[in-house]
Image 1: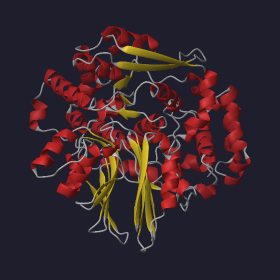
Image 2 (image 1 turned 30 degrees about the vertical axis):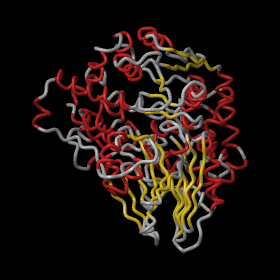
Image 3 (image 1 turned 135 degrees about the horizontal axis):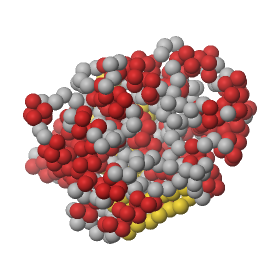
Image 4 (image 1 turned 90 degrees about the horizontal axis):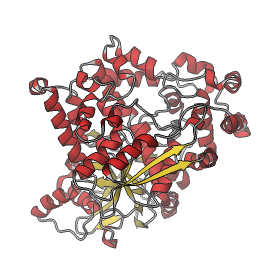
Length: 591
């Protein structure tokens, strides 16, 4: 897990080493162990390294193979790198390191555009070919690893974070009305290629881009999630599906133990993270380090789920650490949490992940986490409502959209309105494309390939990497995701969601954790906007910077301040927090 960056010029001018230095300095928290820059005329790459696999200097990046004429920067982990290495060695390739980085480099030489298809893992990489002058950029199937870029006629710059590109200078940092429309509509999700800034874009997941020396480029989508079920799938019993899902999950969890440093688990006390702990114990892992976080109660709502994480830690004898964060400490950490966001993200649990990561990074460099199970196995409360939908587009947007276009027009000042209703068009396009027949399949596909990528997955990457902590997500193993897509809807929906996964869990973990009410990362002091949090939102939205920007209508802000609890989105979010978070993010990054 690392931070990568680079510049390629199209007009023959030398790449800016100063820009590379600015970007790498911005990403030191992502890779605190080492850094490097390689500059060759019209291209320059930079890298910050977190040492996980091959701790020696032989794994240093940017990685150059002079014999093959390739220079690579890579972020992530290829879990099947040893198998690929053996295959490449059989083809005659010789290795100077034991790193997965070198496997990516030589895989590109051996298989070219087919290389990403062979990778099981999370990754973003950019490789420069000396002989052709071309550059290839790729991102993993489910967008676990980020890749942002800016491009004009003169040059391309890329980085693992948006703030790194801003630090390099020269990017158009004006707000993008289309990105803003997505943010205000799609629960703060801004799907690629857009970001909240007009001049910064992000490569979509499962995408390979080939950039020619003159700046022309071609994108290829090398993977798509298919929900079609074969006759053999339809003939399987519930028990057979349970066995298949269990076997695939065991492989996914086992793969994510590959490291030259210890691997821990973020244990929330929910089914998903508890099952990861149980499967690791089942596989013989001893002295496993697990970590849970809690906050003070507020408004009668508990701020921790230690009751359930204690059950799992005790049952499997883990080396367990509980972290209780006082409300005052949480509020103190909010500015740094916002600074760690590559894009504005409204979920209350950002600060929870940030503080959890800060403490966990004192003990381990790598953790497994349960993110993704709800999107893959239908664990959220809206899935049963959508399963019987006769109009999936209307029903999905009613459940998920914070505002429709007409409502946005009452909240935003007119100059900030996008010309078209891009969020509605994007959702309809994703829901209605081929490859998903039932309403539930359509909803799961958009949640897994769009919502998940630019909300939970991005949140975990940003908050863990702020402390040089690598988070691995076994529920997003692409083979497991492909299998889960074919599981019949009724098996996913049973037992109040994630039925087939709960069936697997019953053979592994105590039933008291499985049959508990579904929980979310509880941060009650942020959920209820009052006291210091309300003051923070008022200060941000009343500041001179906010007034000069003029995003929101003054009457709308007055109504939010007067009664924050009256303005709640369908997904139980606060409209006030959403507006304030955007302004706080812009001010934090001096935009």
